Image 1 (cartoon, rainbow, N blue to C red):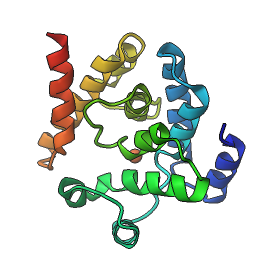
Image 2 (tube, rainbow, N blue to C red; image 1 turned 135 degrees about the vertical axis):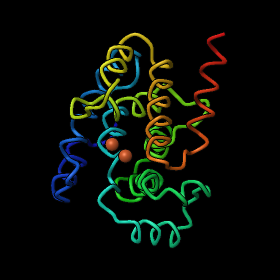
Image 3 (cartoon, protein in one colour; image 1 turned 30 degrees about the horizontal axis):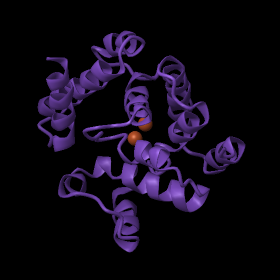
Image 4 (tube, protein in one colour; image 1 turned 180 degrees about the vertical axis):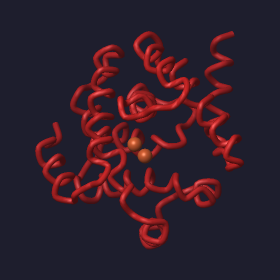
Length: 188
Ligand SMILES: [Fe+2]
Ligand SMILES: [Fe+2]
């Protein structure tokens, strides 16, 4: 049982500009945890810490990664917006003494996802996108679907990410395609 009060205090002390988003993700994730029988405490911690490294800029993120030899793949390195996830997992372990692999992986993979995600990983991946502050075409469909089926909700998040990045002419992390294929394969 981790100390959620301490984490919340720390988040406020840091004056985290993402605090509103973080708290909304926490609420959305807890709602999903109830539906999909996930541990409440683990869900809350993963949600509260998922964007902990978000305030760091690109240079700072690279510095932390290099100094601590955090493992990131070439596509994550090439798409800096993704780097707060591995750094967030590192800081969760270092600053908050989070040892639970499932929590750390939920933070680590909340941006790119990965094949064979755990229920907690899927919950954070989806909650990040459906929290009430998000407003994009199709978000309502994902919100509604998230109450019925977690896997197809993960696929819908991948669909959104792929389309969004194509429209912006940006790179797509291969994990997004791998997860999407995996879910579609499972459906047939
Ligand atoms: Fe994030
Ligand atoms: Fe987030």
